[in-house]
Length: 372
Image (tube, rainbow, N blue to C red):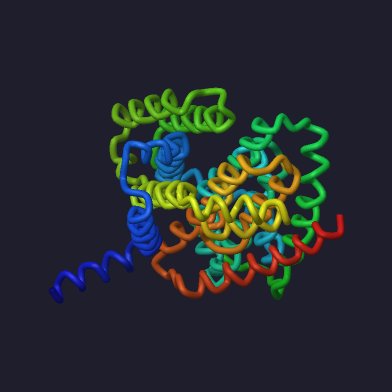
């Protein structure tokens, strides 16, 4: 018995997010018994995209591409303010086109490399938390920046003018606040020596990875079907580098499966659905923000869209609602998982910073939104 408990404790320390969501999914099964409808909860597109991006980004890391990019950044920027600001703005602007998930999968590992090279490991938590906020808020500026925007844009037939006039003021204020937060540290001149940049793969492998990454982006924009992408990535790596298949974070993928089951079951509980119908008539925006804190903004928008015609309040609610708890946005789980894998990780401190920064930004944006 002791050995079993010790093994369970060890597994929880290794995969705390997976264990929590696994337990939450199991609890909801008592209210909504398992059935074939569970398969409808699981977003295979999201899982395939995450898998493909994980292995492709791992391939770039294996090739040493991030080291080359790091040298380029640090050769130009020698001051802490400039480096931290650049690291935060990269996911903010890139998420508008490549989505918040992709931006974090790409730039959080890059951030760890930069801060390790410069001896600024103390800023890892602060920077990754701000990057997560930046990716979530930057992605709200375009219809393709995140899944909830794309869903609402198509579901309600929103015009481009109406969409941008709704989200750009919030995105602009978010950018201003993020810039201020990023430079609220003592500025110092960075002193460091960069190791010789070397790539560990031939030019053909880099070209292959670049093509696969382009295919990932095409799939993000729904130009290429995710099944075609998955087949292309899997086949290419089986032929050229099978070791990269081991680099995917299968724990994170399983976490998403548990999350989909949890959120799907919550939406099937009749009292919950009835309560949502009642509160939506009072304040759509706040209802969307509140529900996002518990089941995430993507399931929240799918659930709530069937009960309201107020697309404006719902759009702002689920975008701003990505702030707050770690589960408010699926992208936040990616940052948390990537950070926990660091040797010097301090998960409790990360969560404290995460909650404080997210709640502060959430309150600021809610106040600003109320003034519009």
